[in-house]
Structure formats: structure tokens, C-alpha cells
Image 1 (cartoon, protein in one colour):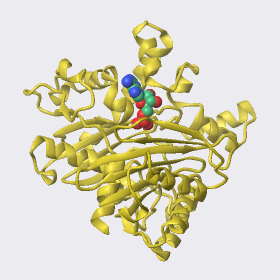
Image 2: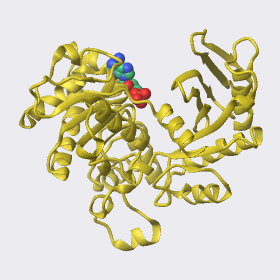
Image 3: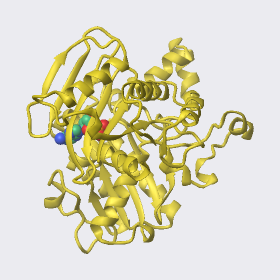
Image 4: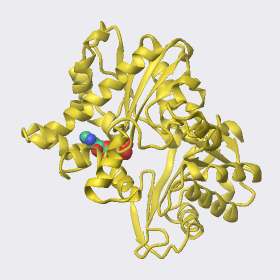
Length: 397
Ligand code: AMP
């Protein structure tokens, strides 16, 4: 079956068409600036040339119409007609406590996703718009929602509760949810597969280090803790998000700089993280690594602080699971930044880890980067959220 995977943001839309038998991506692309002047569609068929076309996209329905047109284009398309697309898998960011698994989308599911809008006001409404737009253009094609939060729904109460008045949980469902669940699930399962071990027998820590970053503890095949919280702001230091801070800092900045809560939240989400720490040098680790290697104080401070936080979370999750068998690195930074992996693992001597630096410098493979005699295995597993969404979609339809 051919599965269209859609990841819809408020003004952008990423897509991939995946052949579920071969698990190959047949074409992928991106619509940008939807509803804004200068909208653009990028389309890359497998083995063909990447095309970038500027064309008006007043709304998401038009964006999806253009995607379907590109996929069925007689010259550069990869299917003859839309009938060849057997199902659509939608990434949905927040499933609240309602969804511990992916589901086939119907009216009730749409309503339940909408009820989670409060928890992810930037993401869920956009995801729903994408689903509605697809339903309009492909009314008979089955669709599945795959939630970023679902994998983390197995966390025990002690991991998901905050030390706040309990009534906030009762009234507003304020608790830890966690994100990047599709990636944490895919990577932890893949690690077990590559090692030829039973998923249910392992204690795995997954470090998803991308522009957004989160860590999870997966014990015997179930997520028992993760670093993102009610929103993706908690936990690690990220590209532009602060991660954990003393909550009193918000009040302190409000008084000192005369800023409103919304303005401070914007600083914490968009101007903090490695971007802020490096005095706006960059949010991109390629630039930060270059600065680090030149001995630049901003690069050194930023990379050291980032890696220290990762190592601290790993330590916490070793405690939470009473041990660890495998530590996986994934996503843009985790898959590519050998320096970050080395710096994090320098803190982990107590776990009996030695890195194999030849393996640590390879790219694009599922690979163990610790030496065979290391007591804990460290791996790089490139994440593939689209493939994971396609697999879930096929499983359910
Ligand atoms: P993601 O959110 O998973 O797409 O990751 C994006 C981030 O990965 C970028 O912002 C970079 O910081 C990082 N990244 C991508 N390629 C490299 C690379 N070759 N070396 C270091 N960092 C990289």
C-alpha cells in the first residue's frame, strides 16, 4: 500500500509518500508560507530532481491540492491516480490523556483532538486543518492520527505529576505528557532489533537531540519517563527553547525588563536555548561546533552546557530504571554531532562506557558506537518518524 504521511503546521506542511511494502519513500516535500504571501512548494520524487515552485496557497486545502497534483503529475509524479494512495497518516501533536495509541480518524476522534487544542494551541488546530483539507480532497481514503504524546502515556503517576496543587490536574489536566513519542518509540524498538535482543527485556534511554530535544526512559518496552512536559518547553536545552529553568525567573525578568508573560514565553521558546546561550551566534550545532573547534568561548560554553544537561538527564533515568542497557542518540544533532556524543559520554564512565571513535564518526547508519567490552551499549539510530507513521497507518487500516 502507498501511504501519504502529512505533518501539518500552522503555515507549513511536510509530506512523504511511502510504499509500505518496500518501506521506501517515493516522494517527499514541503509547502511553506501557507496563507502568507510568497508561498512555495518543494517536491522531490525519489531519484528525480527537486523542484521548488512559488505559487499562491491561501489555505491548507490548496496546499494539499498542490501536493496531490505534484504526486500525480504525468511527468514527475510517482502515482498515476489518487486511487493508488491507500491511506493517509497524520502526525497529531497532542493527544492528551485520551489517546495512548494511534487511531483511525472519524468524527469522534476529530472532536477529541479538538478538545486537546488548549494543551497545544499552536499545533493541534493546524493538525486538524490538515485532516479536514485531506478529507475534502480524498473523502473515501482512510486516515489515521498518530500522536506525539501517545508513546508516553505509559508513564506512571509519579513520573507525570508535577508538585502543584492537585486540583490543577483535576481541573485542567496539567501534567507531563512528553513529545517526539513517534521517534522515541521507533528508535528504541529499532535499537533492540539491531542488537538482536527482545525489546521487552531492555532498559533503553533515547536522546532525541534535534532543534527540539527530549530524552526518554523506556523500560521493558514501555516509556516510564520523558523530559518534555505539559508543553515541549521543559527538559533539555534546545535550539531556541530554554528547557528546565527555575520558574521564579519568569517573575524576575518580568520585573527587571517590564515584559508581559506572553513576551517572556516568546523569549523562552524562541530566543533561548543554544541560540540565547551563544549570544545569538547560532541555533545550529554545525555553527556551534565550528566555533567550539576554533576555541571560541561562546561555542565552548554553549556545547558544554548543552551536553551537561543531557548527561544529567541520562543519570536521572538510570536511577528511574535502576540501570540501563542501551543509550541511543538520534535526530539532527544526535545523529550528526560526534562532538556532542563524545562530550555526553565523557560523563558516563560509571556506566562502563568507552566510545569507539571510528564508529562514532560514521553517518547515516544504525550503529553501536561503544566498544564491544562496554557494559552499556551506546548507539546512533537515525530516526524516521514518517516511516513510523506510515507503519502505524498500515497497521490500523
Ligand atoms: P532536527 O530537528 O532533527 O531536524 O535537527 C536539526 C538540527 O540538527 C540543526 O538545527 C542542527 O543543529 C543539527 N544538525 C544537522 N546536521 C548537523 C551536522 N552535520 N552536524 C551537527 N549538527 C547538525
